[in-house]
Length: 404
Ligand SMILES: NC(=O)c1ccc[n+]([C@@H]2O[C@H](COP(=O)([O-])OP(=O)(O)OC[C@H]3O[C@@H](n4cnc5c(N)ncnc54)[C@H](O)[C@@H]3O)[C@@H](O)[C@H]2O)c1
Ligand SMILES: [Fe+2]
Image (tube, rainbow, N blue to C red; front, side):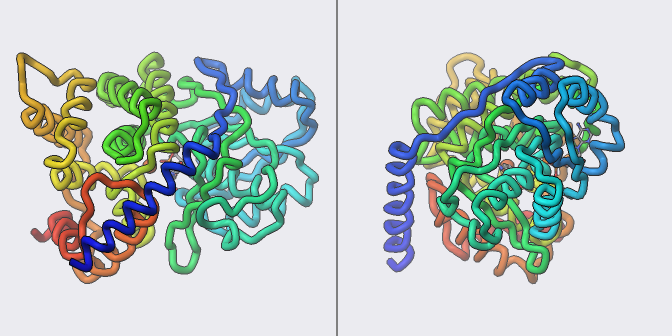
């Protein structure tokens, strides 16, 4: 009884989000696409009259030489840059504050992020604190950003987060490791380049995890109650492209066409979820990241089949549509058969990608607290199709431990 009352409250809150999503426009960045588009973006930064930028990245990107051509193009176009490569996966407040200090010290007037979701999210927050002069704590949550951010240019080097088009940045508290989102339309970058040629060297484990992150964005956005016709189109297109191209890049990471397709799909999935929202998969996975530093995409990949199984009776028709977009329809299968087929197919993909069915790090004694935090995140942020209570949530988490 108490739970059904609470669910009414969560649904009402999600309805408010839906209305806000309609009245508050979400900007979209100018997009450059294709091999070499990252260099076109560098020329565009110069054309915008920018003289000095902070280049936010991570040490591995620098070591791999992914900045070489970007630096040459910036040099050629007379744009000065200061490189900040102190971002690590799941960026912390300290890493972001250090980047902000460097930006101030050098008088940079714009930011270029080159990397996966971690450097991009860190750059989003640096660009926000630069103009708003507020601590990260004060910006965390929904719509706390008052002033426009510093111009932000983005070159993703993974095909996963879609952060180049989303209103969100996820940052971690260094002490509690709790992942905190900063959500505001002002966080959407000004321009982005989807350049698959920077992605051909991504190791298989990162390709699989980031690709599954993108697929999860598409699926969670498609089954969300707040999905719209526009988000449905992006989510179905992303699903179609990922199902075709993720196995290809797992087979041959150097397949440039498939890498480029994955970059586009990840962006489409970002466009879907930035409006429709996410769901329990992300709520669980963010907490696995907070507790065990589980890579974001890996956490999603492990959780996804469990949540689809949990929700399938409520969203059978939606899962059937996703199955059709995944090319799984043969003969005249019913919606329940197609929904089941999608879940089986995702499980077989995970097996082929060497992604385990359980999370080795997950400790039974942490489950009540993880369940509580995940439910809080989901119920106050995501329009999930079927709500779960603490007991259901703990039961699902037990299934994800190695000892079941
Ligand atoms: N803002 C959003 O909308 C959004 C959405 C989903 C996830 N996220 C956040 O994004 C972060 C995860 O981002 P991610 O999955 O892209 O990973 P990441 O940025 O954390 O990078 C993971 C690893 O991949 C390496 N890497 C990146 N590009 C590479 C390349 N081209 N070749 C070889 N190695 C490369 C990095 O150096 C790093 O070691 C998490 O913090 C997550 O919470 C944000
Ligand atoms: Fe994600």
